[in-house]
Image 1: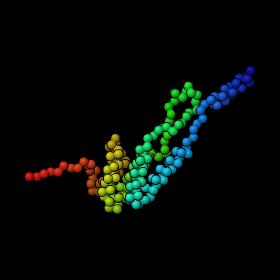
Image 2: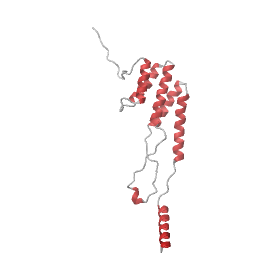
Image 3: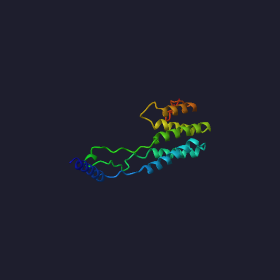
Image 4: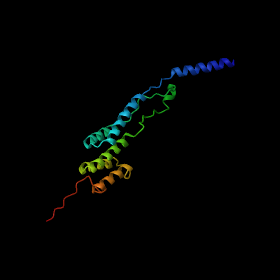
Length: 167
């Protein structure tokens, strides 16, 4: 009796595992995507060619805009329980937005050091504009510091100042 109960439990367990959907593996795809992104970021951090760096900034900003969607992850649960569990969203090991922002700041510093103040100002302002929800974040503070180094100060406005006409 005891042996048959154990055998029956084992068969039910085995049948349950066979009835569930297999876990899809996409780690190779995610790893390749991350490694490409990391390689691009590393190029930004090691480059001194301002034009190439500006292109890298654009590439990283494009990657940061890719919507985060599910990749077909399937929990190995019976179907009646699947509806009770939400599917996790895929994550990279590093935040693509942070990588793009850090590259933008670094490129702004390179532009500042090479005397391209117009490019530096545009890059620093783009960092501040990209983070409207937080008035004081690390990246926004670094961008304001870069603007201060330009001599423009953190009070730089994106809107042109009205011209005063005197009689």
